[in-house]
Length: 160
Length: 257
Image (cartoon, rainbow over all chains, first blue to last red):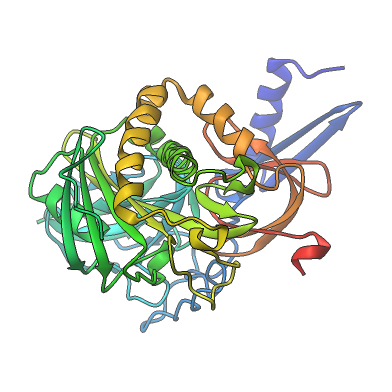
């Protein structure tokens, strides 16, 4: 048997209104796995705000000097007219140029247009994402080492 | 040392005796408005770099070259350049190593070149955003022609071990030509199915059990294929398939111990 589009849409609605992060439905030879945004397979959101283990044998990432919030999103209140920096591609989000280097920016950092904010790695392409605005970082939308989707809001900037 | 040619294929080459990093130089030029295509090549790098800030040992006698291209494709498909570059390098090394059996040269996902199972070249692509949602990319090639490091997590080798006397200058000339061919085949991403098929023919470890090392955890499974985006398709022990967009892979067979 197979699942119809309507049935999948219904399942999506159910998980959307529930508190589940993951739902697995198996009927005959069909297996449907539904996960919420953050619960994406390659990079669950449950880990530390800054991953302590780095890829391969590279040096482990140091803890940030100031304690980072445990929540998935870091946020401080901003006025109206906030500007967003979104992910131009799917990939792994890095807040620092290398595991043992300090983050490009922190919450509250004042940034200039063109200033590097983060890296996104896909395959072995590392793309530096630069600020498109002068302003102050009021939200960081992903954790170091997290897999981000295309269009994900990475930073919210309050214009200067 | 051979004479430094002004071009590789039709691509201009800017040669340096010593430089910090050919990728860094290419990105600096991109920031100043250079659009390429242009090769930056150096006999020696004093600060050669690999993935995630790892050092790349850069001895004279090896090839250190970066190809700068502005707006190679829409950003979302630009990571496929990993495969384009890996194929061009595979082609160029075979061109330059007469008598080397093609089956001895494999590609490790996404873009390391392996000789008899050991790493003999790496490719690191760094992108920087331009205006209007375009990017410029610096495709850095590090090829162990005569030397290789000994203290690496994955075994390394060099082309001289296979009896090759290919010089960096000669290799770059071939790489320029092959890169132009493979870029044309890829056609800004529209020809990725041909790129993917060519990569799969040369891919190392397809069908084997591997470990994928991610920033936050490691995953085991069977390396089934690469998908239409170039992501590694991993079949987990529970049968579920997972697409991996970035990570280091290691074989898990007994021999690799």
